[in-house]
Amino acid sequence: MIDCALIASLSDRLSSQKSNSRQPIYGACAFTFVEAIRLSEERIPLRECGELVSAEIATRGLILGLVAKSLNEKYGRDAVEIIEKASYEAGRTAGRNAARSLPSNDLSSIAELFGRSAATRHFNPEIVEHTKDRVVIHWRSCPIPSLLADFKQKGLGDDYLGFLCPIVEHLDNGFVEGFNPGLTAMTPPQTGEMGLTGNGGFCTIIISKKK
Image (cartoon, rainbow, N blue to C red; front, side, top):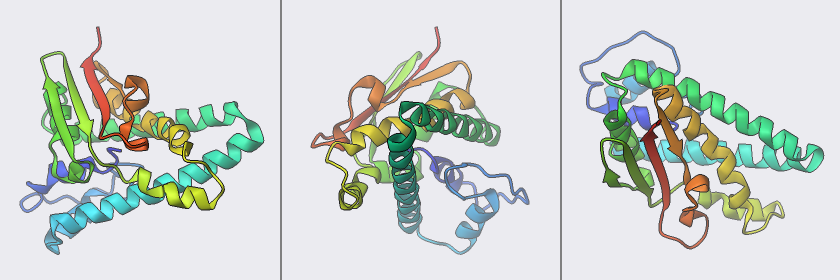
């Protein structure tokens, strides 16, 4: 979900910040510092940038969904667990890169990144609770459910998102712990609030300090 959220957190600073680094910020999206700065220099509207990010997330979700389906059918649950681990590790790398790029990596910083940054607007996030120990965020939209029609064309049922989303969400688990090893995340499959995979109004992620 948060693949390209850092683009938003940088958007207010890109006009004055220059970088020659080609280090990827988020592995699941192909954006880099240079590409983000190029978007800023070309003055692409933020709404259009958000649409590009949303489309990228959906495309990656479609690829991952079809790969996971094929491997699960051929090799079973063991193959799915390998994909989940890879998603987690990709997220952890992305989280570390994000932490190096921001002034702080505390709970409030990641709350802003997940819940208020401009590039997560296409998830329509709402921070419903923010204490010194945890933050609870509702995502009220998501690009992934838009793939359901494509999955149906491949013979998959309405419940396929219930299979795919837990795989994808390992990225967020890894991202949070990579961003700050003292934090942990309960993603929608873990909180049990995955409303966007059906007819519900939101999915819930909880980020908290480790005890």
